[in-house]
Amino acid sequence: MSELSKLCGKGKEFEIGGIKLNIKPLSLSDMDLMTEMAKEGADQQKASKEIIKKVLKDAVPDSTDEEIENVSVEYMPQLMEAISEVNNLNTGNESDVEYLKKIKEQQDDARRARENRNKKAE
Image 1 (cartoon, rainbow, N blue to C red):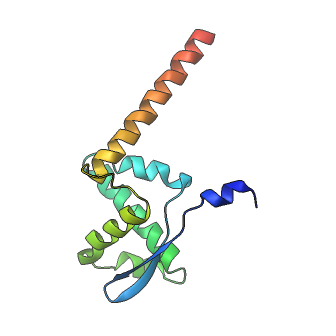
Image 2: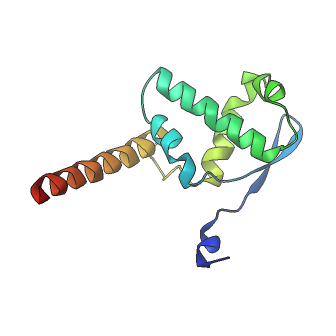
Image 3: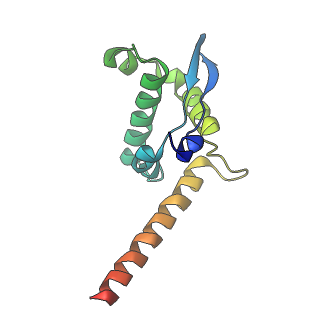
């Protein structure tokens, strides 16, 4: 393994609904879902659901899709809180959604800068 393996996040154990779950951090491959969470409405809900499904599957690899789909919504706040904590998403006074919106704005700014550089190069 390379030095990058040191940058892989470590999981943390949480008790949710009477069971212990080792919640693992999200990775670069989950960035699209994280930025979707910064949007309002249906996109945000869909992204939240996909993140929760992924985290639950990682925490309980032998769980079925049906079992995950049947997890009660009463546990969603606890799951999202655990996901936020293990990923260090809450940055003090701002909400996670505000933080994710800032990430999305930075990504949009970087994309626009690349597009402008490419136009100038042409």
